[in-house]
Image (tube, rainbow, N blue to C red; front, side, top):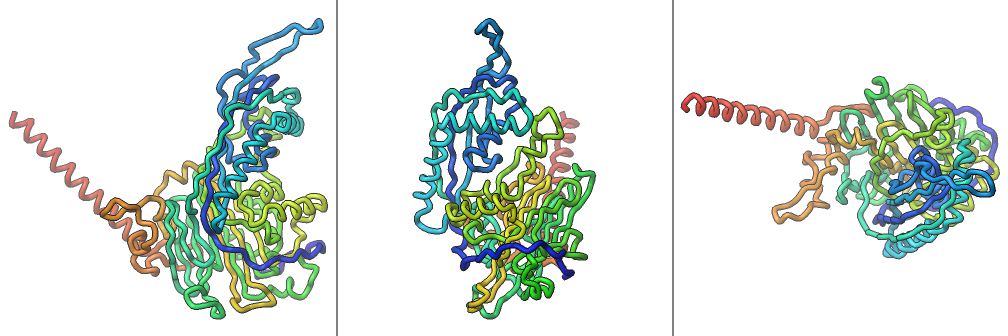
Length: 493
C-alpha cells in the first residue's frame, strides 16, 4: 500500500473498547401540521424548509416528507400603516420517518424518549421559525427571512420495534426483510453480497485464529462497483481493505494521521493506488467518499436503508444548490445522532471538532466511511481489537446501504444480501427468517464466491439465470400452445 500524504499533526483521541453488536431497530414515525405566514411561493422553498426542520430536529433531511395542504400563492394583500404588505399563509403536513438502533431490552423505552423529544421540538414554533429564517439567509433567499411558524397542530408519534438489515463484520447477515442468519465462508475468499445490473457489492472474509471458534471470521475487505447510464455510463470501483499491521509511514511517525491507525486503506481505481488518511474525496462524476477516525461513542449501530426520492432541489440559483445537497463532513456525523452508541458523549466530541476544525486530524483505531453516489449511498464502520489486549485480535468492517435510488430498488437483486429482498414462506404460510438453507438459493457458501474483489460471476447467480431462462422458455411454449389453440378454434368456427 503506497504511503499516505503527510498530514498536519493533531491531538490524539482515545478510542474505547468495542461496543455491542447489531440488535433491534426502533422505527419512529411522527406526523403533524404546521401553519406558516409570510411564506410566498412555498412550493419553491419546500426543500429549504425541509432542511431547516431537519437541522432544528437534528435528524437527516431524508427522514422528512413535507406536503403542502393549502396556501403558498401570494393570495392576499393587506393595507397597513399606509403601505401595502404582501402576506401569504400556508399549511404544511410534516411526516418524519426515522430509525434508532438499540442492542438490549431498553430499545423501546429509548425510542419512546426520542420520539417525545422530536414531538416537542416540532411543536416549538419559535425554534422552527428561527431555523427557517436562518436557512433562508444562508441560501440568499431573503423572502424567507420574515417567514414564521404560527402554530403546529395534531402532532402525534408511533414507535415500532423491528429487526434490521445488512451484513455484519462477523458475518451475520441481517436480511432486508428481518431475516437473521450466519454465513461462514472461508478465509481469504471474496463473496457477492449484492449483485444487480448497476451495483456489485463484494466482501472479503478473513479468519482470525486468536478469536473463539465459530466467532473468528470477519469481513476485512469491501468492494463497491457501480455503473449508471444516467451518469453517461461512467463507472466507479471502490476498494476498501485492511492490513494486519499499520503501514510503515503511519507506524514510524506518530504525527501522521492515518485511518484506523494505518491499517485501513481506500482505492478509487480498483486497487492500483491507495489512500490511507482521512479526507473528503470526490470521484467519478457525481460521487463522494468521506473518511475519518471515529470516537467510539460516535460509532454507529445498525440500520436499514431508505429509498431516496431522487428529486432535485428546486432552488432558483444553481450556485447555491450545494449548500443543501452536499453536507459538510461534521454534518454527516451529527445528522445520524439517533444511531450512535452514545449520542450525548458524542455530541461533546463533535462540538470540539467543530470549534477546532480538526475532524480529519483525529487519531484513532476505529474509523467511519460515508460513500455517496447517484444510485446508492453506504455507511461503513471499521473496528479492530484493543491494541494492548489482543485476546481476540480482529479487524472488522460493518457496511450497510443508507440510501437506495428508486432506479436501483426496481432492479433484480442477487447475492447473499440481495436474495433477502423478497420474503420467503414455509408451507404453514409463516415467513422464513433464520434458516439459511431455505433463505438462500445456493446451498453451499461457495455458491456465492467470486474470483476477486470485482468478480461478478458466481454459482448461485447462474442458478438464478438458468431458472429464469427455463421459466421464459416454458412461458413461450405455453403461449404458443394457447395461441395455436385459439387459431384452431377460430378456424373451426
